[in-house]
Length: 414
Image (cartoon, rainbow, N blue to C red; front, side, top):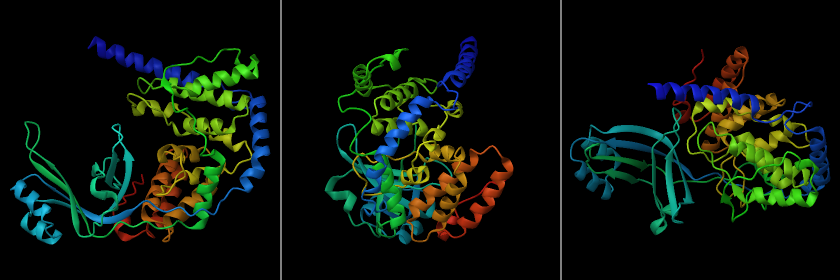
């Protein structure tokens, strides 16, 4: 009991300290001084011609997606059910033969591939769940070309043997259609292209040989020579900081140090990636409790003070696409929504989000992600009247989504 009490006291004290001391704020109300902001402004001015000549006509394609069904079964003859799936029994015959199956029809399913820690190519099939972030998933190594395999009217399942902790069970996707990918409208492609051009996908924030550790930022860092500042920045880019828990502020402190040094040494590419990581709270931590999230600010205002199109930048990194540029920066939907709620351009953001949700030419997955983006934005607002008005508008836009999606969305309007 005493240990629990001490833990709670420690958390409360740390929360108070974190909220008070995350980053220094200057007289301009920003986390970068006027001098630093002027340097960043000069960089943006000098690069604007480059941005205007970027290729903004690249066509980006949606992630492969389809509509299918999910079955879950943990009673009757599971081994026989497994054999039936191996023999590609029809969906109708399966539910007739196994009436105790838990069935979820007409779900949006996404597939994508990645490399695991063993450097194996893995394919993940994921349900897009409107009620939680724990939708049904199946992942397998990409053997026999699984990623490009024709799947219409076929099954993909997970079989779990009986143990002292769980029943024998089967969970499966039934794909009623093929996966398909579609080109995004040029107006969306240009926003993605703008974000790529502004962020510069050729440069990475960390170097390939970076190792875990910590590099201290000297108190007199602004007064040391440019050569030493660049060397210090190089050391920080060669060091990755992993948070020990949700209250460990070191990953964010490390990022702001990189951003400050990058601005001081006119390294725009590294600066922007580091600042976006802060805004998206995109860091590795051993654990990350939700009680710490509210203390982490998004600092969108700093970007809006510069001569860049923040709306196109943030919308551009919110899309999920099949053919991204190497090192394309993906924003975290929840964090982007919080940033939008703090934006001076939130009405412009809101107008585009509602338009995207309604857009029948936009793929279903990106429409759903935009719905989640809107929900995150609205929940982050402090004005309850504004929140309620936004939900009324959202309901109208949801009615223009495909029925199999709109029927699954439940708006909680208090």
